[in-house]
Image 1 (tube, one colour):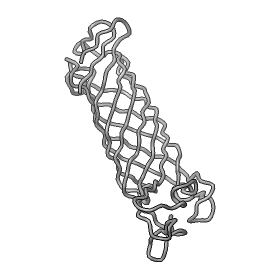
Image 2 (image 1 turned 90 degrees about the horizontal axis):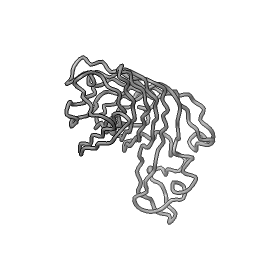
Image 3 (image 1 turned 180 degrees about the vertical axis):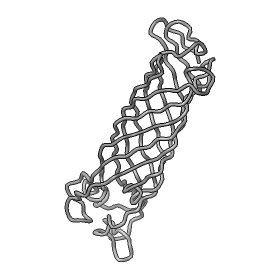
Length: 239
């Protein structure tokens, strides 16, 4: 889809940098590093961002996204409820079928600049941004067959390893705004580093809190559409 919203007089991107608000919807593929790599494999995500570009090509804004992964290394997380065969006994006395998922989200505020070294106009080019970052992730258990109070009630918090913390996020990529307003997108690489800690007061695998400090990192490729909003008077929306 292509949506261009223009508020005010006709905008000519080929006549120099212009002030614009950029709405960004992206998909992402991310690879964990640091302590995060010991627990999770790669994930996919959905990201939303709002950035304001000045006519000096400085940018500032906020973005965030959801982390969706299906490969989890449980290590000893479920040891207190696993049988010798590695199964979980359900409420009816029979093993349940289950699998573990990665779920989480992140938020970031960013400041940066666009360098129009290449592209169709001076509103396109290399984008570099950085800012503070919040990361949270946990293990989600899906019961496929059977039922178990241990993983389907409040006690699941004893096994989900809820972890969060703050750090920094950097982005380098390419922003394209075509002269006719029909091809607007941003692609690039995200880097994130967060100093995190388990936030549960009780974890079954250690029979208490886990106060170990962690360094969780992500590197990801993201690509998505941009919806630019120009000016502040009048109204002309083109689909």
